[in-house]
Image (cartoon, rainbow, N blue to C red; front, side, top):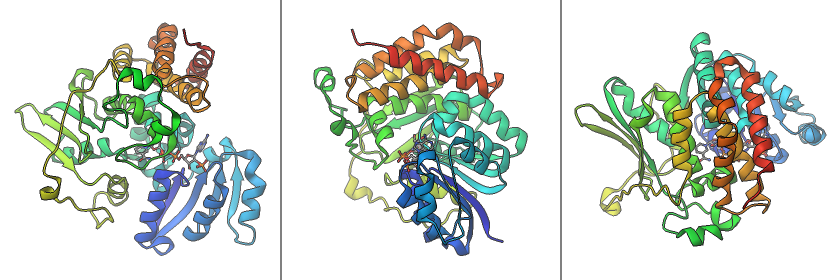
Length: 389
Ligand SMILES: NC(=O)c1ccc[n+]([C@@H]2O[C@H](COP(=O)([O-])OP(=O)(O)OC[C@H]3O[C@@H](n4cnc5c(N)ncnc54)[C@H](OP(=O)(O)O)[C@@H]3O)[C@@H](O)[C@H]2O)c1
């Protein structure tokens, strides 16, 4: 029996790596691809649908439905567009679903996959940050196995295979991004091109900028707390510029387990695809003699306030994660269009968190998806209205 799969966000960086692995592991002969989804990159979406012989291709952009239909005419592949079509495509039984849409736009399809898929490979960390309890609860109620794809959380998940009890610390490694050694004055003038030029990882534009601000690491701290159910104070960020150690766990007796590998997302995606087996993956093998050294440092919260704000979110609880993520997405939109500067992004998020503090801490994601989406909209509006001093 072929394994039924769906890839949400197949045209993105994680999505393309997923398609690459599916192809290397037998493609349509082994995998019954039910759906691939994208947004603006219609040519790639159509090519992927044909290569994988997918039953269906969905674009999030309703205005591009005719383009997708034209690109797939004569193939028999069903096409659809819009957020409701994405939701409906996720509400089908799947053996394995990849959640790799970027941002809070991935939340609804991810929750549907949690209801209908046997295994949910989760790259869309925003779902956990916005609605972690709701997602975990939905997985538990529907018997869906959630496997993290973020390299750090995959590392922790892999290290925990020996047992998750008795963990005293989670050490999330961070490359430090392109501005690791920049001064605040230099960072104030940072351009979009400089912010997307990540030194180690080849990623989508938005997560690359989030790495430069360390908002990505801040999201990952919240994601780790949601996934692994540890005390907020037990999660530490360690700057590790080489990105060889993908993260570590420490036990009460002081023993530390680290997961290492080349910085290539196909390692974590392949792990989630093949779990509980391990198969040969097309990632470089480490040569420790050539590496010769691994460096570590404490993060600088003065230059990277996102990390301090993540702690604030964990302390406040409730729906603060949803506010944090939505404000961060608004900040990112405004930085990308040149409306605000690099350092303004953290100031905007801090302002939004303060403004919506009471509303966010009084609610929680188990109050339901509508509540999460409502607070997401409020936070975006507040973030868009914020003005630099
Ligand atoms: N890239 C990495 O190495 C990496 C590592 C760890 C975790 N992650 C996480 O994985 C997720 C995807 O990241 P990525 O770097 O692969 O992003 P990406 O390259 O920007 O790709 C995002 C995907 O989402 C689609 N998309 C964009 N806006 C959408 C919307 N409003 N509704 C539905 N689909 C939409 C894009 O379609 P089009 O391209 O066709 O417009 C594309 O398929 C993020 O949550 C990120 O934090 C990524």
